Length: 570
Image (cartoon, rainbow, N blue to C red):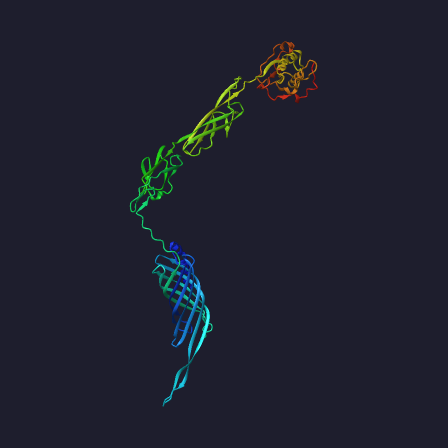
C-alpha cells in the first residue's frame, strides 16, 4: 500500500508536464479483471476472473474522479467445487499524466464488496441393481454472503488509438478486502492483487489544435530575420571598467571590475586583461598591485561567437613616496625671560603610512611636551640694557620610512635692568647713633626727590660700625634711626611706608661697598674723623621694578622693627 501511495505522489508531481495537452471530459472503460487472492492462515492462494467497468469525469487535464464496478468468480475453490464470487463497487480520485499518444494514471478508489459463496452438501444413497451399493451424491448446496469494505490503489496506462478510443494494455491495483472467514473469525483482512486490461472510450473535450508548419525564418536578437539554420549577426556590446581606488601607493592593491550591458554574461566570453598593453590575466575581475610611481592604463578585451569584440580602459595612478614635511608654530613667538610659549606642528607625507606625533626640542631653554620654557635662557649679566636672544625650536615627525623636520624661532627678551641709585652715606660720630643735620639733609632732601618721583620705589638702609667703637648694636641702631627719619611722618620727617623701607645691619663688614661721604664728612668733629667711612648708613633708592643691590644681605622691612618709639628725631 505504501508503494502505491508513493506512485500516486510521483504522478502528481509530473502533472505540470501535461498542462499543454488536450483532455476528454468523460471516460468509460470496459475490461477483463484478474484477481489473485494470496494465501491466508487456513486457505490456500487462488485466482478469480471477471470483468469491470469504469466511469471517469475529468475536472481538468490531470485531476478527475472515477467510479469502478465489476465482479470476479472462481467455481472450483480449493478443489471443493465451491463457488466464490465477489461484486465490488468503489469510487475515488484519479490523477493523470497525458502525452500525445498515451496517458499514465494513478488512482485510489474506496467502497464495498459483496461476497457470495456456495458449497455442495453430500450424502450416501443405495443404488439399484442386483448388487446394491452405497454411493456419495450431492443432496443440496450451502450458501453464504457478506457485504464488506474494499479498496483498490494503483495505476495503469492507456494507449490512444483514436481521439475517442484508447487501448488499456494493463492496470495493476493493490486490492484490499475485509471479508470475514467463517473458519477463522479473527482473520478478516485480505491483501490481493488485481490486473485489468480493456478499452477506454473518451467523450467531450476540444479537438487538438492543428500543428502549425515549422517556420522557415527566425528573428535574431538584433531584430534582423534570417533563414532557419543560418547564423545570426554578431551583436555590438559596450563595456566599462571601474577601479577602486583609482590612486594608490606602491605595494597597495586596486580592484578593477568590468560592467557590461544588461543580458551580456561576461563569464561566457573570452576575456583578456592588460596593463599598459601587456596581457596579464583572463579572469572576470582584476587586482592591480601598485608598482613604481606613475599612471597605468588597465585594459579589458572580450569576444564570443554571439558578440563582436569589445574593449574598455581605465587608469590607475601610483603615487610616489614623499617624506614627512611640515611647519611648526610657537605662540607667542616673543616672550620675556621666565615666560612660556605653546608649540604646535603639522606634518604631511605620502605613501609612508601614518605620521607619528611631533617631538619638540629647543636650542636653549627647555621643552616639556608642547611647552617651551625660557627660564634657563642665559644673558650677559654685566649688560643692564635690554637684551634679546633668538631660540630655535625644532619639530620632528616620522612615518614608517623616514623622519621630517620643521623649525621656527622664539625671541626671548631680557628687560633692561633698573639699577639702584646710590645716595651719599649718612655719617655718625664715634659710639653715636644720632642722625646729625647733614644726614637728615641726605634723607629729607635728596632721598625725598627720588621718592616723590617714584612713590612705589624701595629705600634700602644698610648700617655699619667701625671696629674701634665700644657701644653695642650701633649698626642696628644707626639703620633704625635713619628709617625713623623717613617713616615717622611728623614734623620735618617723611612718611614713606615702612613696608617700602628695607633695613640691614652687617656691622663692620662693609661688603665691598665704597665710601660715599659727599658733603657730610666735614660735619664730623676732627677727633672723630678716623675710621669715619666705617661709621655710616649706606643709602640706596631702588626704583620700581629695579633689583636690590647685590651687596645687601639679610634685609628686612622696617615694618618688622620697633620704630614707633623712636619718633622723628630733632
